[in-house]
Length: 394
Image 1: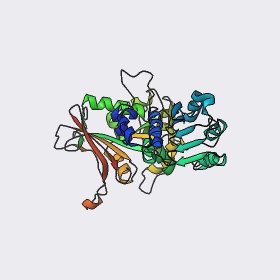
Image 2: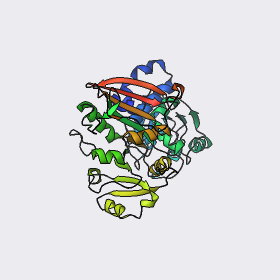
Image 3: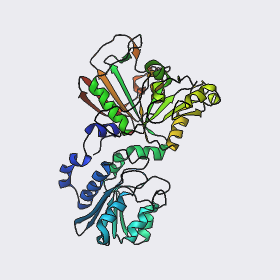
Image 4: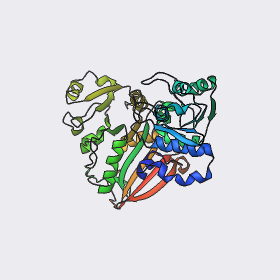
């Protein structure tokens, strides 16, 4: 079974290698589907905003073609497998981890390609919730006389594409909240000093995570206190894709000299709509690849986080690593906008200082506490790393 998003990154190896032992206990359809799932997993997050998909073609019990979708705008998994099989594809069975597309996007419909190749049977893990597909691909195959079997290893397929499915159903990105604290829950001293709470290995791990998400987000408090770069800085990684940097800054207080504005890659600053005409905006966007985006505020003057996340989804952002301080982190948690957490705890005690979370709406009953599921704990150097899924989302 797949781990959750951060857990999969922590494994740092192909999902296929960790699951070979399961082949002995599965039906033939499940064994071939597991191979397709393994192929899909190799693509990582580089397929975003598209899902990860794998396909294998089998004829008379023999593998004749295989493929995975590797990047948006490039051929889908079915096309790679069909090209590898060539004329042998006629009369074969296709095992696909997600329903084939039936519409023209950046590439032609995969359902049409399977039909034209003479595929006899298609085994699918799950329906694609994308409203442009959502059963239409399977229906097109059946209308062409192809035998379609649905739901083989569906749970594994869903876990493989958890962020993609979240965006498709909620129209908001999948958010992982990352934080680091001392054992008594402090992220900085009373003077604001926070370098460094966690150890070197933990910080290197976070850089790797940044390389695998679409965006990294902080609030204006973090920008003013730490002046972060929010980039991937790993010496062994070449040609690294920098995530989009996002700053939640209701009153547009981001300094034009902030380091993150001049780093490689793009920066989005979300502010209240009333600040879009300010001179500050013009100065900020002159610093580089910077965009200032206006969002509605609530009755208390706080930025509408759901509207902000919806805008990110429209920009094809699928995954967000939230690295914010106590105010923004608490707001995300209180509004149910976090899907997973990754909490580094250093073997230190401050006894006082800046708390990791700071709520203005204290929970008075233990039964109302936010429940964590799929909890896992491991050591990273001298730090403790706790990963979990927010209750009801596993």
